Length: 163
Image (cartoon, one colour):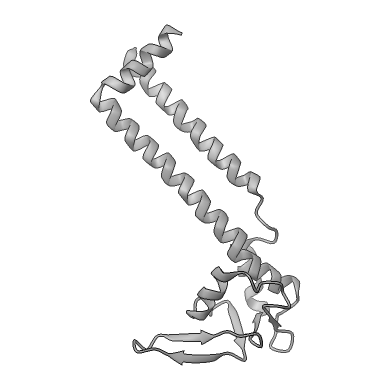
């Protein structure tokens, strides 16, 4: 136990070790934030694309509304579609465009607006957003793993300085 206390004493008293610890834990925190962003993108945004694929919306005739694919509450995707994002993946039917002062076209999405993904783009969508919902356990496991890695690196570094 005294060896562990000696390691913590080195960590809190040596300025060089403190700087290295700040760098290590900043990297760990950055990776954890990236895990959250990736999880959000695959879980929330990806649900829209997976719903279109599972509904068979692969042509203008089979295009679906947000209500038909149960995505009316998915504000993240709706906002991005209004700003014409994902237009290279999703085709929009019955959509009017409104020009703002800066000439940025915004798509007007209402209850009659329908969406579909061309068959040629379905493989790209499956690769980017997966075929299944992302499990919360993947996120939790990644966070716990990064924290354990940070602790291990901290202890190894402190042990190497003591020796």
